[in-house]
Image (tube, rainbow, N blue to C red; front, side, top):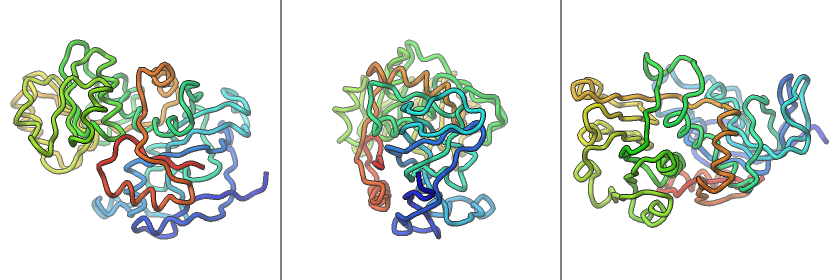
Length: 337
């Protein structure tokens, strides 16, 4: 193997046009890591925020970047080399992972490239029942759903709140998923339904037939009817959208219910929620190979499907980011390496 690889790098922050497909030093596995030849990598919201220099965040939260940097956390590929002490995987294994997240939140984990180094604790064998494109689309979105709804999987401090996030029992409960057509949302619909919940999906009308097929019992087209005008006595709302006025969902949740916020920035209804007896909780998704292996069984047997919105060649990463910025995404956008 030569010592360079193709990668999509940033030399400055800005719009999709700042992404440059070029030669870069080839990744080398460090102790405890494996080197993976990337077959596919997916886009996630943190990629877009980092490319833009986290301009949406307060100035003191923004990254102190050292350019060039390579975006991307989610990959599927093949193990080609082992670092010292790495023993969980073998050369030739097909694997997938969310890489070094949130540790590399501000610097990029390097997934938009031909090779990536990954600590073996973050890796799982790729489910045989899906291809590399679907596998690359899964990790961050699936781990987000798993850690919110099934098992947090760690005891690290929560950057969003003083208490540990605790999933709630879903069997026989009513769960409303806001943003049900997106990367996290379409998986939340399926995992909640698998756990025995009755699911209400909130998305734009174009997603309705697919979301019903994925297990949503009810569908609300938010472009026609605000969810808070029609839903009531919901046990759990999982909001995968964020942004303005997340407080509106408090009115649809029964006392003793919960509101889980995937992106809690800007939520201001904590006092109102406490008065209503509603738990509001969030958590930061973290890389976890063991959970990815566990959740991967659902991908393997078709219980959970990863929807692919569109695919682009690695060299067309800027086009993929343009697609992401247009919104109304159904599932995931994936780069094929």
